[in-house]
Image (cartoon, rainbow, N blue to C red; front, side):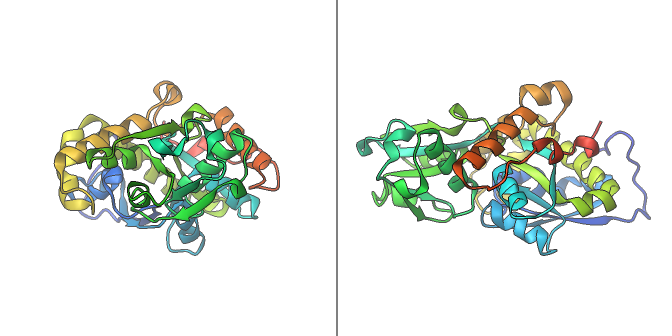
Amino acid sequence: MAAPLGIRHGAAQELRKVTVAGWSPPISEVTNMLAEPDKGIFRARGIALDYLPGQGSASAIQNMLTGRADIAFTDPALLFLAIDAGERLVAVYNIYPQNVFNLVARACSGIATPADLRGKRVSVYARGSGTWIHLMLLLHAAGLKDSDVTVEVAGPLNFGPLIQGQVDAAAATDTGLHVARARGLKGFTVIEVRDTINLPTDVFVVTERAFRERGALIADFLAAYRDSARWMIDRPDEAARLAVTRVINGRDEAMNREIIDLRNASSISETTRRDGLGHFDPGVMQRGADMLHELGLIRNRIDVSAVIRPELLPR
């Protein structure tokens, strides 16, 4: 692959290691990073990329705070919770400006709107995960509380309890639903979180200290990530093929392509079309923080203008 414009390869080039704490195992959604051994997109920017798997967005932030990673790949809602708890963090890149969370309910459950969740059993990936947070947002929009539902932690196989009839609904994502449908899921109602609030799905987060002291390195990483995201948007067939050997859920190349298409679509918004990949819509982020405050999940109102730091975004 040719180096991005302005990047020169050199035999003596010293690579700088950057570890990204993910919210998940190495799955096809993040093929643009996992294909680094094949494509060298980060290497072209002088970055030695390492991906640290996680179990939910909270784990991504925790792995960064404990020094196991440099950057957290996490849900903005979990960012707000961490800031409310006293952590000094900033968001530097809007990975997926489109919200991809949903609620999938059994047709016989009587759930057609978020208000119908009262007294129901709902599975989530993990407490502290994006599925749990977005379930809370749906409940809040319907005037309900956490105590109005029974939350079951199901782990990565979130649809298992739903298919087996052990819960009434599953809090999930577009890709999880896509895979479940491909495996025969039928007779279910889908409620999209974006119809309530189109809060970004994931953002890159760093500590304020890292932002101050390692800004040049973070900027180079973000430029490389944007290059990788653009590669996956422009070359989805190649990405799907490479995912077969790079991800844990990628044996089916056709399925890889379908999931990659979904994730590519979530990377683009009116804001990113105008300003470039990675840019934020501050108004939507502020509304999300305000909803979490109203919900009682965060104690203090957060001024999002102090949290979003676009200065390191590629020009």
